[in-house]
Amino acid sequence: MDTITYILNFRPDEEFFVLAIVFVASTLLIITVALVVMGSKSQVKRQLEEIRKDMGSGSLKKSRKLDLEYLAPIVAPRNKRDQETARHQLMHAGFHDANALTIYYGLKVFSTIIGLLIASSFYLFTPDISHLNLLIIVSVAAGIYIPNVVLNHFVKKRQRKIRAGVPDALDLLVVCTESGLGFSSSLRRVADELMISHPDFADELDTVCAKIKAGVEMVDAFEDLVERTGVTEILGLVHMLAHASRIGGSLAQTLREYTEDYRDRRNQEVEEIAAKIPTKMIFPLLLFIWPCFFIVAIGPSILALTATLGK
Image (tube, rainbow, N blue to C red; front, side, top):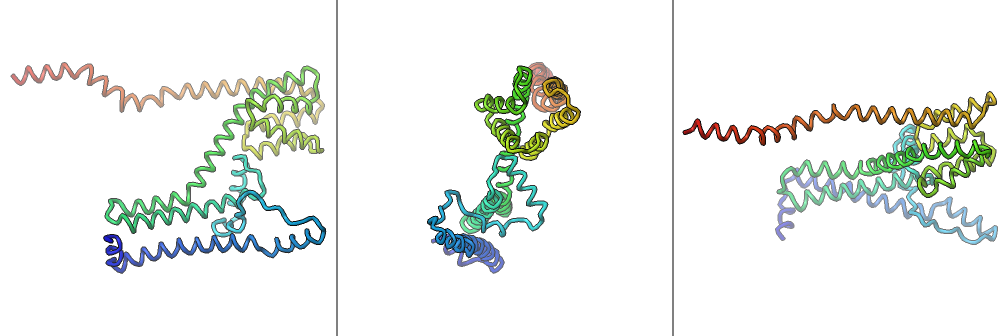
């Protein structure tokens, strides 16, 4: 009852602000529901249904995934470059479906609406809380940017897993090629062996094997691998394989040289990280460790000295 009385006694500026938030949230929710309903009964789907019936193939099967392709125009950027950036991030995160981009934009719509509703609830039901404006801004910003943060987390996690599988894959590839197997057969065997320890990289190698078997050039298949994963460490292998296939060199020797070079590069990266540790430890030492050390070492002496001087 007190909340209702407070809402009825709002000042004009507060009423306008609340009504604006509620109007925006309600409008976005109504547009979302309307687009979903219109999408389920779109003209294209009706025509496809009629064609399937004429061909005697029965009705179209319903997709198990959430159909959000009609929500994309709400928050989708008009710039094609931004759309391609989002599409590449989804590919790097492992989402290769054709409707992954539209589902991502649809989820951004829902998260934005939830952020607006949380902000309006803060303003309506907890008006006396401190830092109210900051909470409202944080709620709206979280609703808008949380999908981007989650997507970046998925991208970094998957790329870290793929990088961890590259050394093992190179070692196995060298062993297979030097034992007499062809490169395609060796790649197929490596993909099968890595399925348990590094499933993400094994899946990408399986895709490379399928492309090579379908007639795609080996170099092009590996370049597509780099584009799908975003792991640029494999570019050196692509260039070396292209050079070996162009001049007719031994692939086994090329792989062995690249594996040794890659191992040296990894050791150098680890040494570089280890060399940065003393510099990074200076600030924790100055802020947390040294003050405690001086308190323990000199504190009793200072207390005894002050007690003596006080007497």
